[in-house]
Length: 339
Image (cartoon, rainbow, N blue to C red; front, side, top):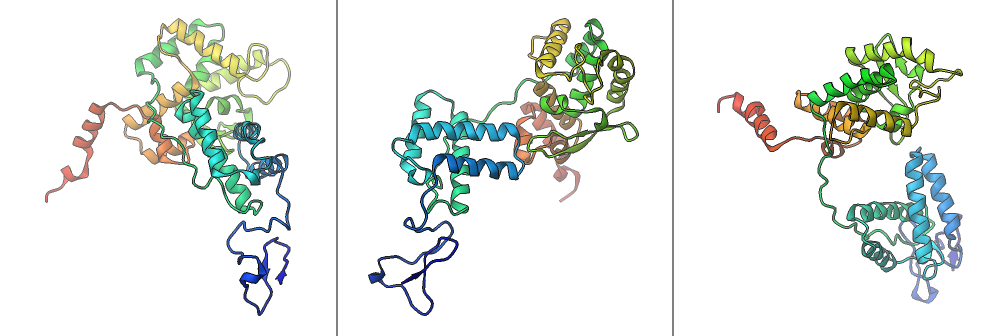
């Protein structure tokens, strides 16, 4: 006989060891269920549970959307062979991976999708909605190491700053360029800044809309703060048509949008005569590389950029072999003491 518990896990009754005649193997380990006792979740139910889980852990909206999109495509591809997530096997997932690669998606894209699938099935398994995790042994394809993107030189930064005086919104343009270069904030973080995020006493900016909603406090260099102050005192009052908390405003008096920001940077790049594509991410890499080249600790750069791991930070650093060689030869502690 078997006693039923609220967890849905079949266990032998007290004082009796399970026998082969019982017809049931001993149940053990997380996620072990009796299929006869609990019906398997539908795709819709599983996706809803996973959505609630991601919201509970405060995942970014873009992250939740990316997961849902990848999982919906998986459902569409597997629904004929696996009507429910509990019917999915490792072979199903490997064939799906292969189908993505045959569609000539990049290895990085397929690896990203694989990460979404692994997270989804691991959640269902650990939450005891699946008897086993079909994605536990699903390996992502090998992704070639991505080379750092373009970085602006100090002279190119100077040309961009000079170009700010030749565009229709000079003070706004100057403030945006200075903040991007000084703080290395992401595009979404810059656009989400409010007036209350600037501490004029401490000369800091509070970044609230970080990736994964991890806020951080960043100092503003003197030149950056002065440019921001001039914009707030002289330009923003003229741009504001209705009361708004947004820090950076477009010419229409609304919060600066990603399209407006792209046009602003494109115009500055054109006026400055730069061949490089100037984007917020370009400033982000430039900020990180400039700090490292001037001796800033890598952990400090990691904190400024809001990265969770140093490996992510290293992607943003654009150091030549000559610079690496020079750093080793001149800064390695072994060269500073006698044996």
